[in-house]
Length: 321
Picture 1 (cartoon, rainbow, N blue to C red):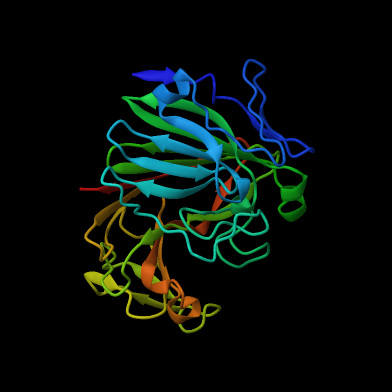
Picture 2: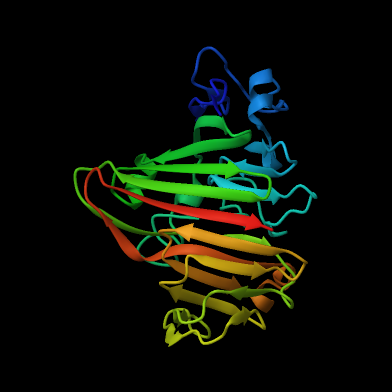
């Protein structure tokens, strides 16, 4: 069953007076400076399991709730999923204690976007997708579970950095024991462009007990000790752990990995068209939090070339048994 949400399926704008509104004139939702924000509580949004509320730093966030009791939170700044709680209440994602919610830097944790560049390069580290407000364009209920779609388009700020017209769509679906994302990048320019991208997913973990299966046989680019000159190799281990600083790219990785987070959870990380994977843990360079998370990232390291009107799509599916 699909129930379309008129209340939330509309553009979300930030006006010059710092007022947030939905563009649909039938239902305007505002947050003015100094005023608290109330979550959408109408019957339709409750039925959908999608509510817009105020998060850290007074930033707007979406809260998705499934009938089974799972929950996800998505900040419109950066289009960043910051929480994924399964029905027992355990949050499987991690936000670093040094994360800030003031739009001066990306949210450090959850599932940040790296677009249109992964890592260092001609433009800012990991691109600008995680630094901008995304727009809610659709919400629906599919078989009883909430689904929302966000979008990001080029604007003067992005074109000053990366002079191309594009349209990004990001669909997030919550089920009882799974969280799925679908990212679509369309070239709306009159000339070709190329990009790299990743979902920089932070998983809550006990780093000493965490491990990943499914990477054996993949070509590796190990950025330890010199990120600018990665060492090529091949993964020979059945189980990859995090004994210290880890920053390694796995090219043409399996489309399904299994993360043991060391906290009693086995998380399946499936993907379609995310050809590569990245494992990262900062170790003592982030002494306050490195023991509490690992990053297992789906990525597209090699540049994707899109001609005008072409679209690239990739899906990530996270689930627990």
